[in-house]
Length: 87
Image (cartoon, rainbow, N blue to C red):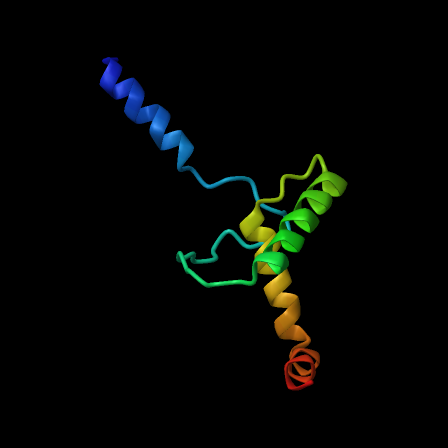
C-alpha cells in the first residue's frame, strides 16, 4: 500500500461516525447548522456536557448527541419554553 493510500485510509477513519448512545437511532439524518448562542450559555452547556460525559462513562456520548437530547427534551416541554420566552 502506498503512503498516499495509507494517508487516505487514516483520514477516512477520522470521519467515520463516532459512537452514540444506544437509545439513539442510527437512521437519523444529519446536517450541519450554524446558530449564534449566548457565550455564557454555551459555557454552561460545555461544562454540563463534560460533567454528563464523565458521569456516563464508559458510555461514549458525543457533544452532538448531548445537544440533540437537550433540544428534543425542550421540544417535549414546549409550553414551558414558551412561558419562559414570554416572561
